[in-house]
Length: 117
Image 1 (cartoon, rainbow, N blue to C red):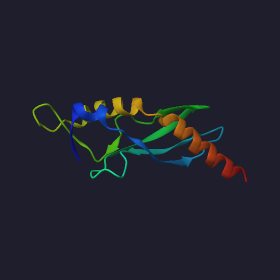
Image 2 (cartoon, rainbow, N blue to C red):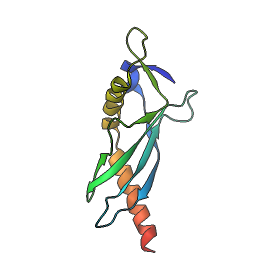
Image 3 (cartoon, rainbow, N blue to C red):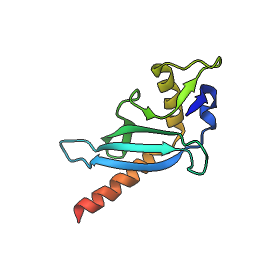
Image 4 (cartoon, rainbow, N blue to C red):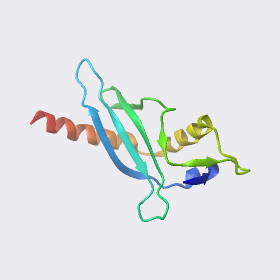
């Protein structure tokens, strides 16, 4: 999906899913992936996903801020395609506005409850 980079703040992404790859233990941190996108009712579906890691109990961070996966092609003011680094900067600003840590926490708590039964 092509989009002018200045339009990224106008994207209204919602949580589409979070997976827990490792629920964590005393020796290994919890980690997984989360996916966000615009509502499926729009014609063009845009999405972004990234890996997350739990730094300490309840504190989550992006595992690699440059490792975002997206179907967006961001364009500069003259219609030129932005470099991967420029795209990462715009997407990191977008991610910063999302309540993704609370969704990750919810998914992790659900996974840990399943593991304890």
